[in-house]
Image (cartoon, rainbow, N blue to C red; front, side, top):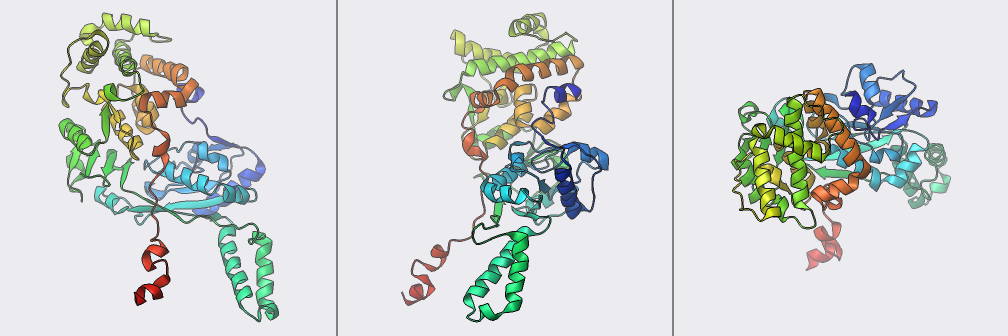
Length: 450
């Protein structure tokens, strides 16, 4: 993994913690959450405050994610919003944390100026010991406060202030006044500068989880189903109409089509579809050449064409299908018949513009593992696992390609490949019923009279 780390393709964009003040705050929050501390003076943290160095020190990669179900977090700075989430067990966790930070940026900026903010992504499941237990997760709520309880104290102080205002004898209540003064020393002026974090809950209808070999749960679609990386027999009966594994190619294709989740790359607007397919073909050639122990260091497209000709008899059917599609697009060749059972089929698709586009592209990246760029962009957990088993020649080529072609313009590459990226970052919020909707604009009494 050293090549990935050196090029910033692994553990990139982490936040460096190197000041004694921040280390002390981190330890205070860590002890508050888990009863443990780190002895390190310098380390790096992700969006949740997880540190790979601290994980190694404690010999526990899940020290902020007990049993991989309820993710805890430590915020030292709002800058963590741009950091990745390491060891993700659910695809929604980073999006939830980022929305929480962005929607409370001003409040968190004020709070982290004096203390760390510690919290948890809470759901009703504490242990996911069977696949069926995952279906008990319906929503995730965000709970957070400073290690000294500033937010809770501010809420209590606000209640005391209201009581002081409403009570005609409040000016004569020395105990109440003394309590308010004492709490104000901790919270500051909550009237002019309210210290309150939004109560946020997020629906968990469609998500990926790393549990049980990897599962894609789609409950919030017209035709619900679960798609598993492991054999479907291994997950047993689930409370959902259909369960597919990666061998059920036709069933997965039908599921994606019925729910209107994907579109052919050739039909996508505003993209150079032929160029995208050419690049996918290059990745397949590189994989074959690496298996043949070819030196791929600095390989250009011309080099890959040469290698493709050399190993033409070894190129898989997926490459042949993409080549036929390119001939149709560029050379007025015959329209190729690529059914859902064809190895090239999922290479020709991308997610449509909808809230779960990231999740669908993640699924497609697992169904098209030879497209190393999409796998890296959409599913880093699986990318890192498969990278460890590649020949050294392929590792060198992939790292060099990602460093030269992707790192220099991440946003542009993602837009060219997937498009419509900005709207899909917002996760569905769980909202309380609107007061007016429940009692009417004239109040409960007026509705009762009518």
